[in-house]
Length: 165
Image (tube, rainbow, N blue to C red; front, side, top):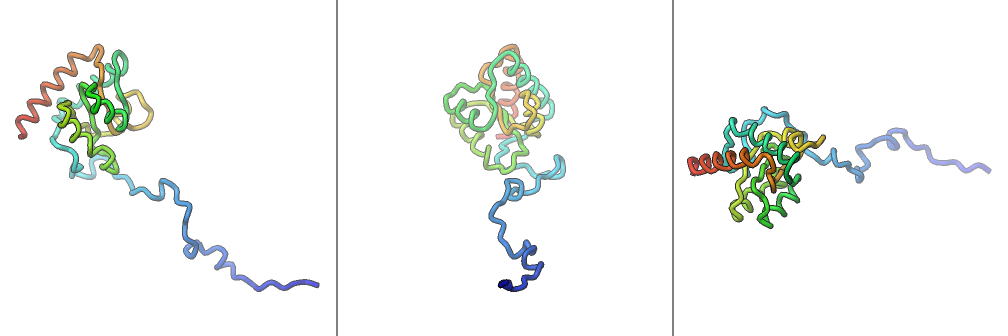
C-alpha cells in the first residue's frame, strides 16, 4: 500500500518572500554605512568644530598615553571615567553610527567640567589606541609622557570653545 502525497509546487518550497525572516543577522538590521567625506552634515552631538591643526596632536597624545600612561577605550569606560572625574581629556569620533551611542558624552563632560574634543574618524581613533578595530571614544586618565601635549590641546580647546560661544 502506497500513500499518495499531494503534489507541492517547487515555487512554494523555495519562495523566500513568503516566509518571514525571523533570524535576522546584525548586519541585516544595520543601515548601510557611508564613506568618509560623502556626508557633509555633522552629527547632532558635535558641539563645536575641532580645528584641523589639533587633530594630529590629539592622536599623538592618545598614542603616547597608551604607551606611557593610562587611557580608557570605548564609550562605556569613557562614561565611567568622566562620572568618576578621573578623565583629563575625552576624545569622541564624529562618524559614529548610530549617533545615540556617544550623544551623551558631551553633556556629561560639560556637567563634570571635563575637556573634550571631536576627531573625524572612528577608524583613526582606534588605530591611535593601538586597536585593530575602530573606537567611538577614548579618555586619557594619565597622559604619561604626553602631559605637555594634552595641556596644549586643552588650552587650545578652551580658546576654541570660548570663541564659538
